[in-house]
Structure formats: structure tokens, C-alpha cells
Length: 126
Ligand SMILES: [Mg+2]
Image 1 (cartoon, rainbow, N blue to C red):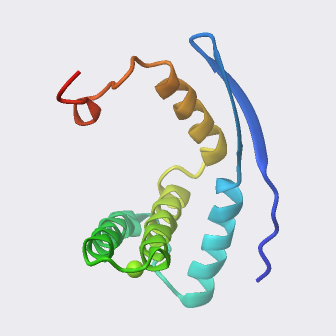
Image 2 (cartoon, rainbow, N blue to C red):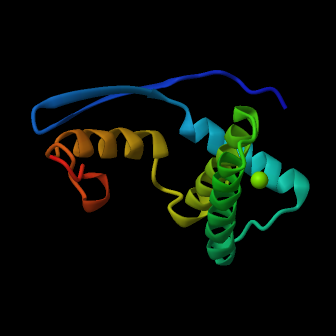
Image 3 (cartoon, rainbow, N blue to C red):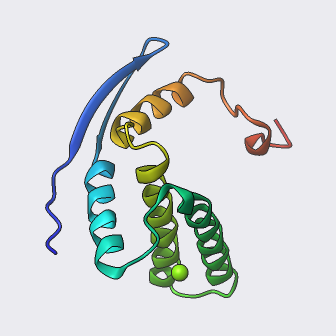
């Protein structure tokens, strides 16, 4: 199946900051759905927890590949697997949500937050 390149462009304002992004998450969801159907993978709302668990497993594979010094292509492949499962889960868990719009809104929201917001991202020295 040919992957048509169509970038989604959207702009949002959040706390005075304009955020413009070009995405194709919705198109990726459609490609993933076609793959799921073609390969006979889980494809029901009750399968959402499995898909999210598989995303965690793929995260572990990506971490393991990085720790073992595998080539970047291998690490990227595992991270793509994570994205596949997350977008596939989103297709079933929140089908009315446009993930391109959701991404743009969340990016704008995060850009509006203070520097180093969130516990895990704070520098110990600052
Ligand atoms: Mg994998």
C-alpha cells in the first residue's frame, strides 16, 4: 500500500503563544488500521489494554536496543513499533478525536507551561 504524503497543518494559540504544526497522525492511523485488518490483528475496543501493553513491550525493546549499542536503525524501528501501537490504541480508544489536532493542542498547552515543568524534567543543579 502506497503511503500518500499529506501533511496536516494546524495552528493553535495557547496563553498567547501561536503553535503551528504539520502532522499526519490521522493518515498514519488509517495506514495502521489497514495493516491490522490485513494481518488479522486484534481490532476491537476490548483489545485496547493489549495494544497499550504491546506499546510498553516495544518501549522495552527500544531501551534494550539502545543499552546494547544497536544501530540507530534498530532503535528507530522499535520506537516506530511503539508509535504503531499507540496510534492503533488511539484509533479504538478515542475514535472521535483527531490526533493531529490533539497533538497541536497538547503541544501548545505544554509550551504555555513554565520552564522544566514536571518533576522528571527538572535539572538537579538549577
Ligand atoms: Mg519491536
